[in-house]
Amino acid sequence: MTRTSPSRAAKPAPVLPRSRATVAFALLGVAFAVLAGRALYLQVVDNDFLQQRGAARYSRAIEVAAHRGRILDRFGSPLAISTPVKSLWAFPAQFDATPAQLASLARILATTPQALKKRVASADDFVYLAKEVSPETSERALALGIHGLNDENAYRRYYPGGEVTAHIVGFTGDRDVGQEGMELSQQAWLAGVPGSRRVIVNRRGDAVEDVASIRAPQEGRDLALAIDSRLQYVAYRELKAAVEANKARAGGLVMIDVKTGEILALANMPTYNPNSRERGARDRMRNRALTDVFEPGSTLKPFTIAAALDAGKVRPDTPIDTNGGVMTIGGRTIHDAHREGTLTVEQVIQKSSNIGAARIALQLPATTMWQTLSEAGFGALPRTGFPGEVSGRLRPAKTWKPIEQATISYGHGISVTLVQLARAYTIFATDGELKPITMLKTDGAVAGVPVVKPKTAAEVRHMLEMVTQPGGTAPRAQIAGYRVAGKTGTAHKLQGGVYTDKYVASFVGFAPVSNPRLVVAVMIDEPEASSYYGGDVAAPVFSAVMGGALRMLGVPTDAPVGNVVLPPEDQRVREET
Image (cartoon, rainbow, N blue to C red):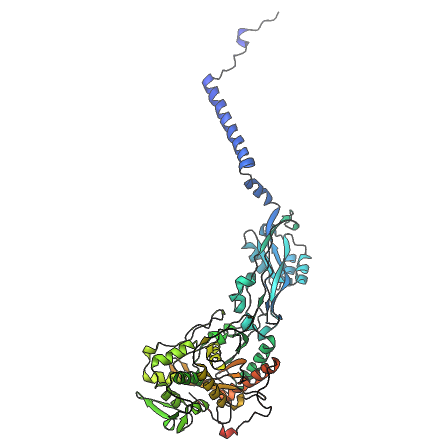
Protein backbone atom coordinates (compact mmCIF):
# COMPACT_ATOMS: atom_id res chain seq x y z
CA MET A 1 0.00 0.00 0.00
CA THR A 2 1.32 3.31 -1.01
CA ARG A 3 1.02 6.08 1.48
CA THR A 4 0.97 9.79 0.81
CA SER A 5 3.33 11.87 2.75
CA PRO A 6 1.92 14.54 4.98
CA SER A 7 3.72 17.26 2.92
CA ARG A 8 1.78 16.29 -0.25
CA ALA A 9 -1.65 16.18 1.35
CA ALA A 10 -4.40 18.41 -0.42
CA LYS A 11 -5.01 21.80 1.11
CA PRO A 12 -8.57 22.54 2.19
CA ALA A 13 -10.62 24.83 -0.29
CA PRO A 14 -11.08 28.41 0.90
CA VAL A 15 -14.45 29.01 2.41
CA LEU A 16 -16.26 32.33 1.60
CA PRO A 17 -17.52 33.88 4.74
CA ARG A 18 -21.29 33.65 4.95
CA SER A 19 -21.72 37.43 5.12
CA ARG A 20 -19.70 38.08 1.98
CA ALA A 21 -21.59 35.40 0.06
CA THR A 22 -24.87 36.94 1.00
CA VAL A 23 -23.76 40.35 -0.27
CA ALA A 24 -22.46 38.92 -3.55
CA PHE A 25 -25.66 36.99 -4.25
CA ALA A 26 -27.70 40.04 -3.33
CA LEU A 27 -25.80 42.24 -5.80
CA LEU A 28 -26.22 39.66 -8.55
CA GLY A 29 -29.92 39.47 -7.79
CA VAL A 30 -30.32 43.25 -7.91
CA ALA A 31 -28.45 43.46 -11.22
CA PHE A 32 -30.61 40.71 -12.68
CA ALA A 33 -33.75 42.40 -11.42
CA VAL A 34 -32.69 45.72 -12.96
CA LEU A 35 -31.99 44.09 -16.31
CA ALA A 36 -35.24 42.18 -16.21
CA GLY A 37 -37.16 45.32 -15.23
CA ARG A 38 -35.54 47.36 -17.99
CA ALA A 39 -36.33 44.67 -20.54
CA LEU A 40 -39.91 44.51 -19.32
CA TYR A 41 -40.23 48.31 -19.41
CA LEU A 42 -38.88 48.62 -22.94
CA GLN A 43 -40.83 45.68 -24.35
CA VAL A 44 -44.15 46.21 -22.59
CA VAL A 45 -44.48 49.69 -21.12
CA ASP A 46 -42.34 51.84 -23.45
CA ASN A 47 -41.79 49.82 -26.57
CA ASP A 48 -42.10 52.86 -28.89
CA PHE A 49 -38.41 53.68 -28.47
CA LEU A 50 -37.16 50.31 -29.72
CA GLN A 51 -39.72 50.26 -32.50
CA GLN A 52 -38.73 53.75 -33.60
CA ARG A 53 -35.04 52.89 -33.60
CA GLY A 54 -35.69 49.71 -35.50
CA ALA A 55 -38.07 51.35 -37.96
CA ALA A 56 -35.60 54.16 -38.56
CA ARG A 57 -33.31 51.64 -40.18
CA TYR A 58 -35.80 50.65 -42.85
CA SER A 59 -38.73 53.16 -42.99
CA ARG A 60 -39.34 56.87 -43.35
CA ALA A 61 -42.35 59.23 -43.25
CA ILE A 62 -42.63 61.27 -46.47
CA GLU A 63 -44.85 64.32 -46.99
CA VAL A 64 -47.58 64.00 -49.64
CA ALA A 65 -48.36 67.28 -51.41
CA ALA A 66 -51.96 68.51 -51.47
CA HIS A 67 -53.49 69.79 -54.71
CA ARG A 68 -53.92 73.58 -54.54
CA GLY A 69 -57.30 74.94 -55.58
CA ARG A 70 -57.67 76.59 -58.97
CA ILE A 71 -58.27 80.30 -59.50
CA LEU A 72 -60.97 80.86 -62.11
CA ASP A 73 -62.49 83.84 -63.86
CA ARG A 74 -66.21 84.53 -63.55
CA PHE A 75 -67.00 82.04 -66.36
CA GLY A 76 -64.79 79.23 -65.08
CA SER A 77 -61.78 79.85 -67.30
CA PRO A 78 -58.58 78.97 -65.39
CA LEU A 79 -56.33 81.78 -64.24
CA ALA A 80 -54.13 79.58 -62.02
CA ILE A 81 -53.85 75.79 -62.03
CA SER A 82 -51.53 73.22 -60.50
CA THR A 83 -49.82 70.82 -62.89
CA PRO A 84 -48.22 67.50 -61.79
CA VAL A 85 -44.43 67.54 -61.52
CA LYS A 86 -41.76 65.58 -59.64
CA SER A 87 -39.41 66.41 -56.79
CA LEU A 88 -36.11 64.56 -56.24
CA TRP A 89 -35.14 63.77 -52.64
CA ALA A 90 -32.74 61.66 -50.58
CA PHE A 91 -31.67 60.74 -47.04
CA PRO A 92 -28.22 62.34 -46.67
CA ALA A 93 -26.76 59.40 -44.73
CA GLN A 94 -27.70 57.01 -47.52
CA PHE A 95 -27.00 59.19 -50.56
CA ASP A 96 -24.03 57.68 -52.39
CA ALA A 97 -23.05 58.88 -55.85
CA THR A 98 -19.81 58.43 -57.73
CA PRO A 99 -18.13 61.58 -59.11
CA ALA A 100 -19.34 60.66 -62.59
CA GLN A 101 -22.92 60.13 -61.39
CA LEU A 102 -22.88 63.41 -59.47
CA ALA A 103 -21.62 65.28 -62.52
CA SER A 104 -24.34 63.75 -64.69
CA LEU A 105 -27.02 64.58 -62.11
CA ALA A 106 -25.79 68.16 -61.93
CA ARG A 107 -26.09 68.52 -65.73
CA ILE A 108 -29.62 67.15 -65.69
CA LEU A 109 -30.64 69.53 -62.90
CA ALA A 110 -28.79 72.52 -64.42
CA THR A 111 -26.57 73.00 -61.38
CA THR A 112 -23.06 72.03 -60.26
CA PRO A 113 -21.71 68.98 -58.41
CA GLN A 114 -20.42 71.31 -55.69
CA ALA A 115 -23.89 72.75 -55.14
CA LEU A 116 -25.40 69.27 -54.84
CA LYS A 117 -22.71 68.20 -52.36
CA LYS A 118 -23.30 71.28 -50.26
CA ARG A 119 -27.04 70.73 -50.20
CA VAL A 120 -26.68 67.12 -49.06
CA ALA A 121 -24.03 67.94 -46.47
CA SER A 122 -26.09 70.73 -44.90
CA ALA A 123 -29.18 68.55 -44.37
CA ASP A 124 -29.83 66.37 -41.34
CA ASP A 125 -32.30 63.61 -42.10
CA PHE A 126 -33.93 64.60 -45.39
CA VAL A 127 -33.08 66.79 -48.37
CA TYR A 128 -34.69 67.88 -51.63
CA LEU A 129 -32.17 67.87 -54.47
CA ALA A 130 -34.64 69.41 -56.91
CA LYS A 131 -38.24 70.57 -56.73
CA GLU A 132 -40.91 70.83 -59.38
CA VAL A 133 -38.99 69.21 -62.22
CA SER A 134 -40.68 67.61 -65.19
CA PRO A 135 -41.42 63.88 -65.10
CA GLU A 136 -38.92 63.46 -67.94
CA THR A 137 -36.17 65.14 -65.92
CA SER A 138 -36.96 62.97 -62.92
CA GLU A 139 -36.84 59.84 -65.05
CA ARG A 140 -33.41 60.77 -66.45
CA ALA A 141 -32.08 61.44 -62.96
CA LEU A 142 -33.29 58.12 -61.55
CA ALA A 143 -31.84 56.29 -64.56
CA LEU A 144 -28.36 57.19 -63.27
CA GLY A 145 -28.82 54.53 -60.57
CA ILE A 146 -27.61 56.73 -57.69
CA HIS A 147 -28.03 55.04 -54.32
CA GLY A 148 -30.51 56.89 -52.08
CA LEU A 149 -32.01 59.11 -54.80
CA ASN A 150 -35.83 59.01 -54.95
CA ASP A 151 -38.67 61.00 -56.45
CA GLU A 152 -42.15 61.99 -55.35
CA ASN A 153 -45.21 63.52 -56.92
CA ALA A 154 -45.62 67.29 -56.53
CA TYR A 155 -47.42 70.21 -58.17
CA ARG A 156 -46.30 73.38 -59.91
CA ARG A 157 -48.48 76.46 -60.35
CA TYR A 158 -49.18 77.54 -63.92
CA TYR A 159 -50.80 80.82 -64.98
CA PRO A 160 -52.46 80.66 -68.42
CA GLY A 161 -52.95 84.45 -68.53
CA GLY A 162 -49.28 85.21 -67.93
CA GLU A 163 -48.60 88.95 -67.94
CA VAL A 164 -52.24 89.83 -68.63
CA THR A 165 -53.52 88.73 -65.20
CA ALA A 166 -50.27 88.78 -63.22
CA HIS A 167 -51.18 91.63 -60.87
CA ILE A 168 -54.54 90.10 -60.04
CA VAL A 169 -53.61 86.47 -59.52
CA GLY A 170 -50.06 86.88 -58.18
CA PHE A 171 -47.92 83.76 -57.76
CA THR A 172 -46.81 81.12 -55.27
CA GLY A 173 -43.35 80.54 -53.85
CA ASP A 174 -41.59 77.74 -52.01
CA ARG A 175 -43.85 74.88 -50.90
CA ASP A 176 -46.68 76.31 -53.03
CA VAL A 177 -47.46 79.17 -50.62
CA GLY A 178 -49.00 82.36 -52.06
CA GLN A 179 -46.60 85.29 -52.36
CA GLU A 180 -48.57 87.97 -54.22
CA GLY A 181 -52.07 88.83 -55.39
CA MET A 182 -55.06 86.58 -54.77
CA GLU A 183 -52.69 83.66 -54.30
CA LEU A 184 -51.55 85.41 -51.12
CA SER A 185 -54.80 86.96 -49.90
CA GLN A 186 -56.75 83.71 -50.38
CA GLN A 187 -53.99 81.36 -49.19
CA ALA A 188 -56.17 79.75 -46.51
CA TRP A 189 -58.91 79.01 -49.06
CA LEU A 190 -56.71 77.76 -51.91
CA ALA A 191 -54.11 75.77 -49.98
CA GLY A 192 -54.83 72.21 -49.02
CA VAL A 193 -53.32 70.38 -46.06
CA PRO A 194 -50.36 68.12 -46.97
CA GLY A 195 -50.61 64.45 -46.06
CA SER A 196 -47.87 61.94 -45.30
CA ARG A 197 -46.99 58.34 -46.13
CA ARG A 198 -44.58 55.78 -44.70
CA VAL A 199 -42.18 54.00 -47.05
CA ILE A 200 -39.78 51.06 -46.69
CA VAL A 201 -36.17 51.89 -47.49
CA ASN A 202 -33.70 49.21 -48.56
CA ARG A 203 -30.07 49.05 -47.42
CA ARG A 204 -29.03 51.32 -50.30
CA GLY A 205 -31.45 54.08 -49.24
CA ASP A 206 -33.98 53.51 -52.04
CA ALA A 207 -37.70 53.75 -51.25
CA VAL A 208 -38.95 50.37 -52.44
CA GLU A 209 -42.48 50.09 -51.03
CA ASP A 210 -45.30 52.19 -49.58
CA VAL A 211 -46.25 50.78 -46.20
CA ALA A 212 -49.22 52.94 -45.27
CA SER A 213 -50.82 56.33 -45.61
CA ILE A 214 -50.37 58.13 -42.32
CA ARG A 215 -52.54 61.10 -43.24
CA ALA A 216 -54.40 61.70 -46.49
CA PRO A 217 -53.86 65.15 -48.05
CA GLN A 218 -56.79 67.58 -47.99
CA GLU A 219 -57.22 69.23 -51.38
CA GLY A 220 -57.54 73.02 -51.71
CA ARG A 221 -60.73 74.72 -52.88
CA ASP A 222 -61.33 76.51 -56.18
CA LEU A 223 -61.76 80.29 -56.14
CA ALA A 224 -64.00 82.16 -58.60
CA LEU A 225 -62.97 85.78 -59.24
CA ALA A 226 -65.12 88.58 -60.63
CA ILE A 227 -62.62 89.05 -63.47
CA ASP A 228 -63.85 88.56 -67.02
CA SER A 229 -60.86 87.24 -68.98
CA ARG A 230 -62.12 88.81 -72.22
CA LEU A 231 -62.43 92.28 -70.72
CA GLN A 232 -59.15 91.84 -68.87
CA TYR A 233 -57.32 91.20 -72.13
CA VAL A 234 -58.87 94.29 -73.78
CA ALA A 235 -57.90 96.42 -70.77
CA TYR A 236 -54.33 95.08 -70.77
CA ARG A 237 -53.92 95.50 -74.54
CA GLU A 238 -55.15 99.10 -74.65
CA LEU A 239 -53.27 100.18 -71.53
CA LYS A 240 -50.01 98.68 -72.79
CA ALA A 241 -50.41 100.41 -76.14
CA ALA A 242 -51.11 103.76 -74.45
CA VAL A 243 -48.13 103.53 -72.09
CA GLU A 244 -45.82 102.69 -74.97
CA ALA A 245 -47.27 105.30 -77.34
CA ASN A 246 -47.03 108.06 -74.75
CA LYS A 247 -43.60 106.93 -73.50
CA ALA A 248 -45.05 106.83 -70.01
CA ARG A 249 -43.44 105.55 -66.85
CA ALA A 250 -46.44 103.43 -65.83
CA GLY A 251 -50.20 103.11 -66.09
CA GLY A 252 -53.27 101.52 -64.56
CA LEU A 253 -56.85 100.68 -65.48
CA VAL A 254 -59.81 99.52 -63.38
CA MET A 255 -63.26 98.40 -64.59
CA ILE A 256 -66.16 98.03 -62.15
CA ASP A 257 -69.65 96.63 -62.71
CA VAL A 258 -71.99 99.38 -61.46
CA LYS A 259 -74.74 96.91 -60.49
CA THR A 260 -72.68 94.38 -58.55
CA GLY A 261 -69.53 96.25 -57.49
CA GLU A 262 -67.41 93.51 -59.06
CA ILE A 263 -63.99 94.40 -60.47
CA LEU A 264 -64.26 92.96 -63.99
CA ALA A 265 -60.79 94.03 -65.13
CA LEU A 266 -57.68 95.44 -63.49
CA ALA A 267 -54.48 96.06 -65.41
CA ASN A 268 -51.12 97.65 -64.62
CA MET A 269 -48.05 98.53 -66.60
CA PRO A 270 -45.27 97.56 -66.35
CA THR A 271 -46.08 93.93 -65.62
CA TYR A 272 -44.27 90.58 -65.31
CA ASN A 273 -44.63 86.90 -66.19
CA PRO A 274 -45.64 84.88 -63.10
CA ASN A 275 -44.66 81.64 -64.85
CA SER A 276 -41.03 82.68 -64.96
CA ARG A 277 -38.70 82.17 -62.02
CA GLU A 278 -36.93 85.32 -63.13
CA ARG A 279 -39.78 87.75 -62.55
CA GLY A 280 -37.65 90.86 -62.79
CA ALA A 281 -37.61 93.93 -60.58
CA ARG A 282 -39.94 94.13 -57.62
CA ASP A 283 -41.26 97.38 -59.05
CA ARG A 284 -42.95 95.43 -61.86
CA MET A 285 -44.90 93.29 -59.40
CA ARG A 286 -46.71 96.16 -57.66
CA ASN A 287 -50.45 96.31 -58.20
CA ARG A 288 -50.31 100.07 -58.73
CA ALA A 289 -54.08 100.43 -59.00
CA LEU A 290 -54.36 99.42 -55.34
CA THR A 291 -50.99 100.23 -53.78
CA ASP A 292 -49.84 103.50 -55.42
CA VAL A 293 -51.36 106.86 -54.58
CA PHE A 294 -51.47 110.04 -56.67
CA GLU A 295 -53.17 113.43 -56.57
CA PRO A 296 -56.36 112.99 -58.62
CA GLY A 297 -56.47 116.51 -60.02
CA SER A 298 -59.66 117.57 -61.78
CA THR A 299 -61.28 114.15 -61.48
CA LEU A 300 -62.13 115.26 -57.91
CA LYS A 301 -64.11 118.35 -59.01
CA PRO A 302 -67.44 116.48 -59.39
CA PHE A 303 -67.38 115.66 -55.68
CA THR A 304 -66.88 119.33 -54.78
CA ILE A 305 -69.81 120.29 -56.99
CA ALA A 306 -71.94 117.44 -55.57
CA ALA A 307 -71.30 118.63 -52.01
CA ALA A 308 -72.38 122.16 -52.93
CA LEU A 309 -75.49 120.98 -54.81
CA ASP A 310 -76.49 118.73 -51.93
CA ALA A 311 -76.04 121.60 -49.46
CA GLY A 312 -78.20 123.90 -51.59
CA LYS A 313 -75.37 126.41 -52.13
CA VAL A 314 -75.56 126.28 -55.93
CA ARG A 315 -77.68 124.98 -58.80
CA PRO A 316 -76.41 123.66 -62.15
CA ASP A 317 -77.12 127.02 -63.77
CA THR A 318 -75.69 129.19 -60.98
CA PRO A 319 -73.16 131.67 -62.48
CA ILE A 320 -69.63 131.55 -61.08
CA ASP A 321 -67.20 134.39 -61.77
CA THR A 322 -63.80 132.86 -62.57
CA ASN A 323 -62.14 136.29 -62.66
CA GLY A 324 -60.32 135.66 -65.89
CA GLY A 325 -58.75 132.43 -64.61
CA VAL A 326 -56.78 133.94 -61.70
CA MET A 327 -57.51 133.89 -57.96
CA THR A 328 -55.37 134.82 -54.95
CA ILE A 329 -56.03 133.33 -51.52
CA GLY A 330 -53.86 134.14 -48.52
CA GLY A 331 -50.97 135.25 -50.65
CA ARG A 332 -51.18 132.18 -52.93
CA THR A 333 -52.39 132.44 -56.52
CA ILE A 334 -54.17 129.70 -58.44
CA HIS A 335 -54.84 129.66 -62.20
CA ASP A 336 -56.99 128.13 -64.88
CA ALA A 337 -55.43 126.67 -68.01
CA HIS A 338 -57.78 128.89 -70.05
CA ARG A 339 -58.95 132.35 -69.07
CA GLU A 340 -62.72 132.45 -68.79
CA GLY A 341 -65.18 134.97 -67.43
CA THR A 342 -68.42 133.89 -65.83
CA LEU A 343 -69.29 130.18 -66.10
CA THR A 344 -72.28 128.23 -64.89
CA VAL A 345 -71.68 125.40 -62.43
CA GLU A 346 -72.21 122.98 -65.33
CA GLN A 347 -69.54 124.75 -67.34
CA VAL A 348 -67.12 124.68 -64.41
CA ILE A 349 -67.15 120.88 -64.78
CA GLN A 350 -67.32 120.87 -68.58
CA LYS A 351 -64.34 123.20 -69.00
CA SER A 352 -62.61 122.04 -65.81
CA SER A 353 -62.16 125.45 -64.17
CA ASN A 354 -59.96 125.41 -61.06
CA ILE A 355 -61.12 128.88 -60.09
CA GLY A 356 -64.76 127.89 -60.43
CA ALA A 357 -64.29 124.77 -58.29
CA ALA A 358 -62.39 126.76 -55.65
CA ARG A 359 -65.05 129.51 -55.43
CA ILE A 360 -67.77 126.89 -55.03
CA ALA A 361 -65.77 124.99 -52.39
CA LEU A 362 -65.18 128.12 -50.32
CA GLN A 363 -68.96 128.59 -50.01
CA LEU A 364 -69.04 125.38 -47.97
CA PRO A 365 -67.93 124.69 -44.41
CA ALA A 366 -64.75 122.61 -44.57
CA THR A 367 -66.47 119.85 -42.58
CA THR A 368 -69.25 119.58 -45.19
CA MET A 369 -66.79 119.14 -48.03
CA TRP A 370 -64.68 116.72 -45.98
CA GLN A 371 -67.74 114.62 -45.15
CA THR A 372 -68.69 114.21 -48.81
CA LEU A 373 -65.15 113.15 -49.73
CA SER A 374 -64.92 110.80 -46.76
CA GLU A 375 -68.28 109.17 -47.51
CA ALA A 376 -67.12 108.74 -51.12
CA GLY A 377 -64.41 106.41 -49.79
CA PHE A 378 -61.39 108.71 -49.90
CA GLY A 379 -58.99 108.30 -46.99
CA ALA A 380 -60.27 104.77 -46.26
CA LEU A 381 -59.33 101.30 -47.45
CA PRO A 382 -61.50 100.09 -50.35
CA ARG A 383 -61.59 96.66 -48.68
CA THR A 384 -61.13 94.57 -51.80
CA GLY A 385 -59.27 91.97 -49.73
CA PHE A 386 -56.24 92.44 -51.94
CA PRO A 387 -52.93 92.45 -50.04
CA GLY A 388 -51.15 95.77 -49.83
CA GLU A 389 -54.11 98.03 -50.65
CA VAL A 390 -53.76 101.51 -49.13
CA SER A 391 -56.17 104.17 -47.94
CA GLY A 392 -54.67 107.25 -49.53
CA ARG A 393 -54.70 110.54 -47.61
CA LEU A 394 -57.56 112.85 -46.67
CA ARG A 395 -56.53 115.20 -43.88
CA PRO A 396 -59.08 116.18 -41.18
CA ALA A 397 -61.12 119.26 -42.07
CA LYS A 398 -60.02 121.09 -38.94
CA THR A 399 -56.49 121.32 -40.36
CA TRP A 400 -57.59 122.92 -43.65
CA LYS A 401 -56.66 126.51 -44.41
CA PRO A 402 -58.74 128.38 -47.04
CA ILE A 403 -56.06 127.87 -49.69
CA GLU A 404 -55.97 124.16 -48.89
CA GLN A 405 -59.74 123.84 -49.14
CA ALA A 406 -59.52 125.60 -52.50
CA THR A 407 -56.81 123.30 -53.88
CA ILE A 408 -58.46 120.14 -52.55
CA SER A 409 -61.57 121.18 -54.51
CA TYR A 410 -59.67 120.45 -57.73
CA GLY A 411 -57.68 117.45 -56.51
CA HIS A 412 -54.47 118.82 -54.98
CA GLY A 413 -53.61 118.15 -51.32
CA ILE A 414 -55.38 114.78 -51.35
CA SER A 415 -54.04 111.39 -52.49
CA VAL A 416 -56.04 108.44 -53.82
CA THR A 417 -55.59 105.09 -55.50
CA LEU A 418 -57.07 104.33 -58.91
CA VAL A 419 -59.41 101.74 -57.38
CA GLN A 420 -60.69 104.31 -54.86
CA LEU A 421 -61.33 106.80 -57.66
CA ALA A 422 -63.17 104.26 -59.82
CA ARG A 423 -65.32 103.16 -56.90
CA ALA A 424 -66.18 106.76 -55.95
CA TYR A 425 -67.65 107.36 -59.42
CA THR A 426 -70.29 104.69 -58.75
CA ILE A 427 -72.00 107.52 -56.80
CA PHE A 428 -72.70 109.37 -60.07
CA ALA A 429 -73.44 106.20 -62.05
CA THR A 430 -76.21 105.34 -59.57
CA ASP A 431 -78.71 107.36 -57.58
CA GLY A 432 -75.97 108.70 -55.33
CA GLU A 433 -74.88 105.40 -53.75
CA LEU A 434 -71.30 104.27 -53.15
CA LYS A 435 -71.05 100.60 -54.09
CA PRO A 436 -68.94 98.09 -52.16
CA ILE A 437 -66.42 96.51 -54.52
CA THR A 438 -64.95 93.05 -54.63
CA MET A 439 -62.43 90.93 -56.51
CA LEU A 440 -64.64 87.86 -56.01
CA LYS A 441 -67.61 86.79 -58.10
CA THR A 442 -70.97 87.72 -56.59
CA ASP A 443 -74.47 86.40 -57.18
CA GLY A 444 -76.16 89.64 -58.24
CA ALA A 445 -76.78 93.31 -57.61
CA VAL A 446 -75.63 94.72 -54.26
CA ALA A 447 -76.94 97.68 -52.29
CA GLY A 448 -74.79 100.75 -51.91
CA VAL A 449 -74.46 103.39 -49.20
CA PRO A 450 -76.21 106.73 -49.93
CA VAL A 451 -73.71 109.60 -50.22
CA VAL A 452 -75.57 112.33 -52.15
CA LYS A 453 -79.22 112.87 -53.09
CA PRO A 454 -80.49 111.10 -56.24
CA LYS A 455 -81.26 114.52 -57.77
CA THR A 456 -77.68 115.65 -57.14
CA ALA A 457 -76.27 112.48 -58.69
CA ALA A 458 -78.42 112.99 -61.80
CA GLU A 459 -77.33 116.64 -62.14
CA VAL A 460 -73.64 115.77 -61.86
CA ARG A 461 -74.14 112.88 -64.30
CA HIS A 462 -75.42 115.37 -66.88
CA MET A 463 -72.41 117.63 -66.26
CA LEU A 464 -70.04 114.70 -66.75
CA GLU A 465 -71.73 113.89 -70.06
CA MET A 466 -71.08 117.51 -71.14
CA VAL A 467 -67.37 116.89 -70.52
CA THR A 468 -67.29 114.35 -73.37
CA GLN A 469 -69.09 116.62 -75.84
CA PRO A 470 -67.59 119.40 -77.98
CA GLY A 471 -66.73 122.22 -75.61
CA GLY A 472 -65.63 119.76 -72.92
CA THR A 473 -62.18 118.44 -72.07
CA ALA A 474 -62.75 114.83 -73.20
CA PRO A 475 -64.41 114.52 -76.62
CA ARG A 476 -61.99 111.67 -77.37
CA ALA A 477 -63.80 109.60 -74.71
CA GLN A 478 -66.89 109.34 -76.95
CA ILE A 479 -68.07 105.91 -78.13
CA ALA A 480 -70.10 105.24 -81.25
CA GLY A 481 -73.65 104.23 -80.29
CA TYR A 482 -73.33 105.06 -76.58
CA ARG A 483 -73.69 108.13 -74.40
CA VAL A 484 -70.72 108.40 -72.06
CA ALA A 485 -69.91 110.59 -69.06
CA GLY A 486 -66.68 111.22 -67.21
CA LYS A 487 -64.01 113.61 -66.08
CA THR A 488 -60.43 114.29 -67.09
CA GLY A 489 -57.53 114.95 -64.77
CA THR A 490 -54.11 116.44 -65.52
CA ALA A 491 -52.12 116.94 -62.33
CA HIS A 492 -48.54 117.97 -61.64
CA LYS A 493 -46.68 115.29 -59.69
CA LEU A 494 -45.62 116.09 -56.16
CA GLN A 495 -42.08 114.88 -55.42
CA GLY A 496 -40.18 115.74 -52.27
CA GLY A 497 -42.87 118.24 -51.30
CA VAL A 498 -42.45 120.19 -54.55
CA TYR A 499 -44.67 120.15 -57.65
CA THR A 500 -42.66 119.19 -60.71
CA ASP A 501 -43.12 119.38 -64.47
CA LYS A 502 -44.08 115.71 -64.52
CA TYR A 503 -47.75 114.82 -64.83
CA VAL A 504 -50.37 112.20 -64.07
CA ALA A 505 -53.03 112.07 -66.80
CA SER A 506 -56.32 110.41 -65.92
CA PHE A 507 -59.90 109.87 -66.97
CA VAL A 508 -62.76 108.29 -65.02
CA GLY A 509 -66.13 107.67 -66.62
CA PHE A 510 -69.14 105.43 -67.05
CA ALA A 511 -71.58 104.30 -69.76
CA PRO A 512 -74.19 104.13 -71.05
CA VAL A 513 -75.47 107.33 -69.41
CA SER A 514 -79.13 106.30 -69.78
CA ASN A 515 -78.53 103.21 -67.63
CA PRO A 516 -74.90 103.03 -66.44
CA ARG A 517 -73.41 99.53 -66.48
CA LEU A 518 -69.64 100.03 -66.18
CA VAL A 519 -67.19 102.46 -64.57
CA VAL A 520 -63.69 102.61 -66.09
CA ALA A 521 -60.80 104.57 -64.58
CA VAL A 522 -57.53 105.12 -66.49
CA MET A 523 -54.28 106.61 -65.17
CA ILE A 524 -51.13 107.26 -67.22
CA ASP A 525 -48.07 108.16 -65.13
CA GLU A 526 -45.55 110.63 -66.59
CA PRO A 527 -46.50 110.64 -70.29
CA GLU A 528 -43.62 112.16 -72.26
CA ALA A 529 -44.77 112.06 -75.87
CA SER A 530 -46.66 114.83 -77.66
CA SER A 531 -49.21 115.50 -74.89
CA TYR A 532 -49.71 115.00 -71.18
CA TYR A 533 -53.40 116.04 -70.88
CA GLY A 534 -55.93 113.56 -69.55
CA GLY A 535 -58.25 114.25 -72.47
CA ASP A 536 -55.54 113.34 -74.98
CA VAL A 537 -53.74 110.53 -73.14
CA ALA A 538 -56.25 108.71 -70.90
CA ALA A 539 -59.64 109.44 -72.52
CA PRO A 540 -58.88 107.46 -75.74
CA VAL A 541 -57.98 104.41 -73.61
CA PHE A 542 -61.33 104.74 -71.83
CA SER A 543 -63.13 104.92 -75.17
CA ALA A 544 -61.44 101.82 -76.58
CA VAL A 545 -61.88 99.72 -73.45
CA MET A 546 -65.40 100.84 -72.56
CA GLY A 547 -66.59 100.48 -76.17
CA GLY A 548 -65.19 96.98 -76.46
CA ALA A 549 -66.61 95.95 -73.08
CA LEU A 550 -70.14 97.24 -73.78
CA ARG A 551 -70.25 95.38 -77.07
CA MET A 552 -68.89 92.16 -75.54
CA LEU A 553 -71.48 92.30 -72.78
CA GLY A 554 -74.29 93.02 -75.24
CA VAL A 555 -75.31 96.26 -73.53
CA PRO A 556 -78.00 98.01 -75.62
CA THR A 557 -76.96 101.22 -77.35
CA ASP A 558 -78.51 104.52 -76.26
CA ALA A 559 -77.24 106.87 -78.97
CA PRO A 560 -77.08 106.96 -82.79
CA VAL A 561 -74.06 105.28 -84.35
CA GLY A 562 -72.98 108.62 -85.78
CA ASN A 563 -72.98 110.35 -82.40
CA VAL A 564 -69.20 110.85 -82.16
CA VAL A 565 -68.32 114.49 -82.86
CA LEU A 566 -64.72 115.66 -82.42
CA PRO A 567 -63.94 119.38 -82.48
CA PRO A 568 -60.96 120.68 -84.47
CA GLU A 569 -57.65 120.26 -82.70
CA ASP A 570 -57.20 123.99 -82.15
CA GLN A 571 -60.62 124.24 -80.48
CA ARG A 572 -60.19 121.49 -77.92
CA VAL A 573 -60.39 122.40 -74.25
CA ARG A 574 -57.63 121.13 -72.00
CA GLU A 575 -57.13 121.43 -68.28
CA GLU A 576 -54.03 121.54 -66.12
CA THR A 577 -54.07 121.58 -62.32
